[in-house]
Image (cartoon, rainbow, N blue to C red; front, side, top):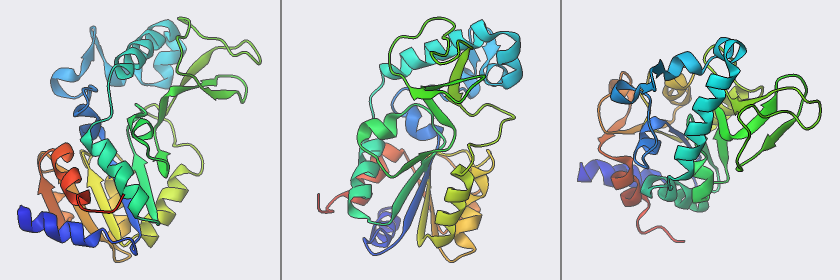
Length: 243
């Protein structure tokens, strides 16, 4: 493991283009539920049954109750060592992009700025009828209304069955095709399109690295696989870098 860490550390040179993908495992280390296994239920509902446009259309009050709970929970969480290490890595790698599947905003709170939140953010709300979108960290009413047109607001996240925000996937693919190094951290390797990112990077010559507590469906396809907590491994990778 030590030898692998040193080899990956050597790859993270300021002259290289680095793209990082993070998933639920990084947030889990900060206490954010993954909604998998024992975390899969909220009250008596499966999270994936609520994070859907048809669920919101049928029961907007219930779906908003779920998201109010999530916002309150995440507000009490702090960025962990992995979040801070990635923010530090960004400061040392001029050509760096962090793509996250997480919607909790913890990367931004840790200081990441070259950041793409591909599934949106719990802290964004948008109108169901007009183009109004805003970031809002305050307390929202049970069924928030648009200040511009009076229609119902919805969480600014990508739900199951919805496409990504226009431009997000295009930017990710462009950067993956230009990357010298690609790191997948805390991801399940199951959710598309992110599950194919390693392939997009590798087919253009990038070195691919996985950091996860356990093996995933893509582990055998990576050049390096570091098994352990991201909060333990990432600080080692950035240790000794200036700044």
